Each structure stands twice: as C-alpha cells, then as structure tokens.
Image (cartoon, rainbow, N blue to C red; front, top):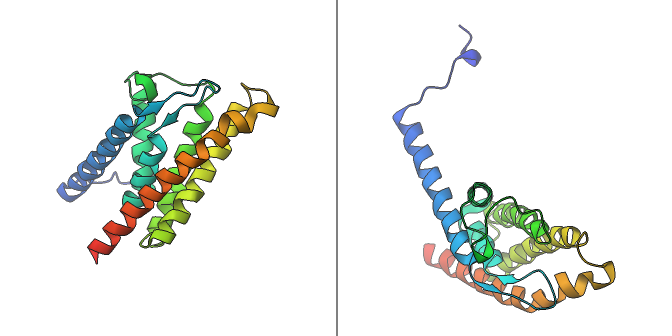
Length: 186
C-alpha cells in the first residue's frame, strides 16, 4: 500500500504532544475569557474598553503565532457555542458593532506571534513594535466592522481615538512583560 494513503498512527508521543498543545490553547482561551470581563463602557460609543487586546498581545508575545491563534480561535468557538466568554459575559455569534474588532484580534494574534516566532520580541522595542502592529490590525478590522453601524463622520471618534491612550498603556505593559521574561530566560 502507498505510504501516502496510510492513516497516521496515533503514537504515544503524538497523543502526548496533542494533549499538551490542546491544554495550552485551552489555558490561553480561558485567559482571554477572564480579561474580556475587564470592561469599561463608554457612553458615546458601542465599543467598550476591554482587557481582550492586552490578553491577545501577551499571549502572542509568549506563545507565538500558531499557539496564540489557536487560543483565540478556541475562545471564539467557546463563545459561539454559548459559553459566556465575551465581554459582559456574552456569548453566541456576535455580528454586531464590535465583531470587526474580534476579527482584528485574530489577525493581531497572528501578527504579534510572527514577530515572536522570528525572535524579534526579545527586547522592549521589538515587543512594542509587534504590539503596535497588532493594534493596527485590531483597529483596521474594528473600524471596518463599526462603519456598518455608525455614521462615517463619527467613525474615528467612536472606534479609534478614545482607545489610543489605553492601547499605548496595554502595549507598553505587554512589551515590558515580554522583554523581562526574555531577559530572565537568558
């Protein structure tokens, strides 16, 4: 029989590795669920300030692109399945004013994680550039999604400007943590 047609053998090392990766993804998704509950509503916009972006950045800086995207994907699946993991303990398929931000966070997981995969986040500067790049993903997709729900003339005031200072703080904290851990690892 052709080797390419044979089913993969489920060996103990494979199963052990799969279980480890699944546990990492589950822990990451739970971390995101907890940080999602850190929520500060703003009266003039449907988009709240949350801890999700900090969670996405720290996971990607620590786990890399594949594992952080797996964690974020599992987080989305948990929410879609009805588990109350999204901000304000919401769940379900969220096709509203903030859904673009969730798409952006998935992209951010990948982008920041790629910086980590390439070894570019071992310094504060590299980690901070990675986080800012991830924030650009979140805001780009978030603003696209939000544009279907708010007038274009209000888009930046409702979906970007109020979040820049907080994003700077979150990115600085995430980059500081990543650089400190990298330094301790050497």
